[in-house]
Image 1 (cartoon, one colour):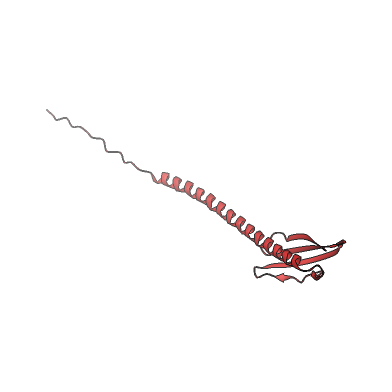
Image 2: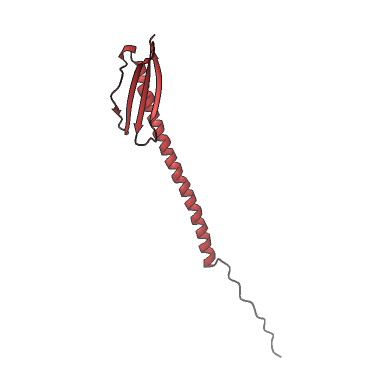
Length: 126
């Protein structure tokens, strides 16, 4: 009698096909591109905010300097001051608006600012 031969099935190979790996890598690449794009926009926003803060600080400093002067020493127009950071600070004093006061306008322009920063203040005669 013939012996019964039991045929064992070949073990199934487990793993991923090349197509599955390529699809997974493509999805990962698209996700990483979205993250990097968002990161770039955040960096640009932080840069704009930094420039705006620096320009506003320069304008406030100049305005406080002008307010600290005696009333008669505040001149009508200041010559532009160029800051090492690439900003230009100008100011104008108008004494025709108020009877006992001067309207001081400080303007800061610069390479990193979309619009000029302008601060107004009134220095009164006490």
